[in-house]
Image (cartoon, rainbow, N blue to C red):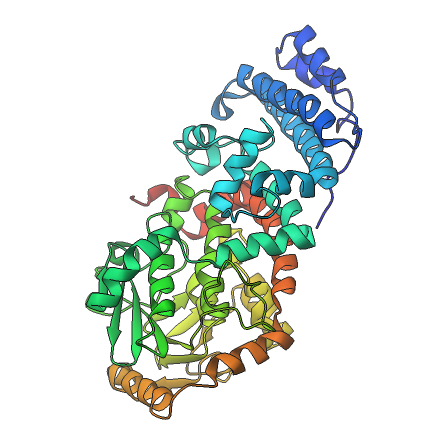
Length: 473
């Protein structure tokens, strides 16, 4: 992970940057001189660093909004943001374990990422943005944001970089959501749960999870993330089924009307419009996607493959039409992939300007390093019915035979029982991707994705490749 550690403000003549932007001289000079030095004592460092962060935030508020800044005020804003981020990183590099212990009562409590980023803001004001600050900035289009959520990425990256704290956070994200537990009794009794963006249904020996976002070709966004993870929790925890199936619902788009679409990845329209927060990425890949791969954890047992502490079952993906971006990422954690012969896979990170989840970690295991780089960095399309596509897809059938073929797959996987399935899944994971490797990957991912999410390149890519300016909500 790139280090931001430094004890001096970045750039030449910082006072001139701030002065030319029209900031009060005494206020700017006082802030620059107050850049604290680390004492190594958490209780002593917290108030001095917190004051520095908060005063930097106040200076930023004096400047015009991002869209109204001239060259001088833009340079001043960049200097304030960079200097504060460097200070945050130095503080976290020294105090992350002490901070995490305070946030979790010495590892006694499990706190999910979407909550802990705001708990940190309460414990060390200014370290990360508050919920109110994030909500305010979320009213802006992505290109008009200052990127205050980058501070969440810096925090989560340092947290995940720490072995004990990072593993504990991974454990927290593998536990069933409280919303899932509240719906479990209903699902077990009725065998079905209908939600706006997802459904889960027991059909014989299989639990079917269906992604439903038809207006956006089953794209994922803030509206789908909670319900998808709940559906995955319930499908996994259902003791009446032995496997789970993931499929996309029928969509409304005239081009594909009446057809199922597996998943078209992140909702690029909402991304451009600033409606997807940075923490969304962390919740998705540490929660829903990782639960398909590793199962649902128990709080009293460490979520490692040796102790077999998960509740897990094999997962089957049924790929109709296409699996783009996040859709393709789901396939990399499945045990069996059935695809229509006209379906295709892409990871269009180059055209989006973001990192495609954990695909950089997982895709090379399927197709090798070169094809993985071509797919992620150069937009190579992988047709399911091709030699490269079949490295990811276990079975490819004509589109009209998908339902019949899926029934056959389920019957084949369950007719003789699946007693050893969880054991074999764990045995594969030990060599391929132990949880600690995932933790270290996510430490890099948190840092880099936060910066990608607010990069001008992301906006340029979406306007060039997605015609984002003319898309409707």
